[in-house]
Length: 189
Image (cartoon, rainbow, N blue to C red; front, side, top):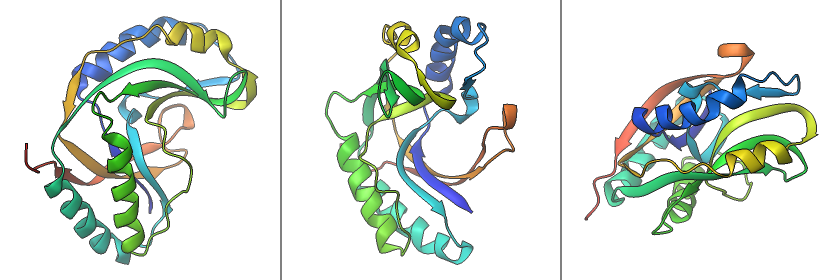
């Protein structure tokens, strides 16, 4: 199973962002593939292929983290691109984290994943929601400039999920996601 751990924004946050993004989606660009709204999430740890027998240990470790974590106030805001502007392969909206807690959560999540015997993608954590992928490196400055004006509603993230990703099975041959497990943040407030 191809897995990642992520925070999924609530429906009202997704709908707000979708309304902002929709006019951009309506202008076809052969290099740009917009991500489906039901796939929008903040990745804390990307695990890649994980054998089924490791998911129980993985779930136990994630449950321990969630029990110690208090809910986090977040807001989707601004835009950026990976690996950078001008020539990018991904366009995203950023995540505002006023208490700067997501980086720590990502770090301890990755630690729990490693402890379960699963290797984590080692890229530097940058909190974001992927909006579009590009078939080749393209100058995305015009998209980033427009999307950078976005500021979504604040919400409180109260859980994270272990999500399976099936490549090529989603809309427009993108990924389809299924929640394998979800854990509420129930730490001291």
